[in-house]
Image 1 (cartoon, helix red, strand yellow):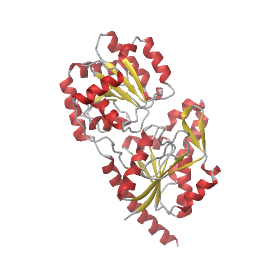
Image 2 (cartoon, helix red, strand yellow; image 1 turned 90 degrees about the horizontal axis):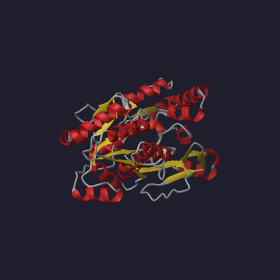
Image 3 (cartoon, rainbow, N blue to C red; image 1 turned 90 degrees about the vertical axis):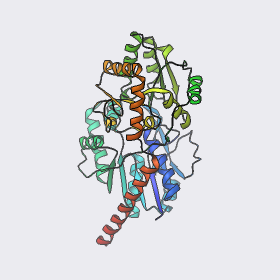
Image 4 (cartoon, rainbow, N blue to C red; image 1 turned 30 degrees about the horizontal axis):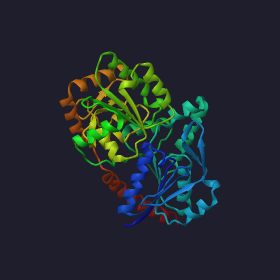
Length: 393
């Protein structure tokens, strides 16, 4: 059955974050295999929408506290609404509860079709940092919970995400729909290693550690840099590569300099070439991701595709499915604990490689597989909605 599907989200390239990547892969695979899929997202001045699927953008303004993001104003964009109403959607999928999610809900109600809403992010941390008022934050969380209550079905990516959504006040049912990975299975080779070393100034033979993601303190990056400082003070040989960007990058660079780490830390900035990203994973001894902020993250699976073990905080949402010393490394939430885990990895490279191989076998999942599962669920929800509408008629 061929469907017409809309993927709605606040972020989409050129904004680079995990949810934007999710939306892009949903749209790509659904459009390729199952009908027509479009993306609906705010306008961005740097956008170049040369995709295999259509992208509909609506009016937006820059977010004051996060300049790389846009605040959408869909109801102020008349031609956008006219174009959107003409699309014969069978189902719409909201990946956030803000302007794009409200647009998806409006379309779903007008057309009598299902609205799927996925809970991806721990919004509370962002709002606490931006609003400086617990009362206002609680009001916003109630609005977020109300949005998810209004959906036909709510998805999250793991059980830990369900608990976070419950903390926000949501009391409905939740369906677990796991994400995938857009990096295929790869193996190290001298050519990719040399490419990474040349591109980022990594000394040949020196173990490489990496972080990939937004450069924001909510990702526990102060603790990560402190751990690097501990390693450096002990005389451990390593090079650290931070991939990505964000509002805290300058502060991170300053902290690195203050700890005397400039010679062994490189800030790569955004890397949009996915083959180059894969090459970085392949060259790395470990992917360090101590975030407690994410409900889930794509990067442990990306690392697993390349046999690179991830180091995660025990009990974090991102650590679901990880068994310490088997298919990843789990640490307590402290710089000392992270430094000890890295030291072990550096001194036991064969063990680290075996852990990475186990991750490849146990947590890797392609986006094609993930979207196949989502499509089957879409079909079920469409049939269910039609049955409900007939009973109400």
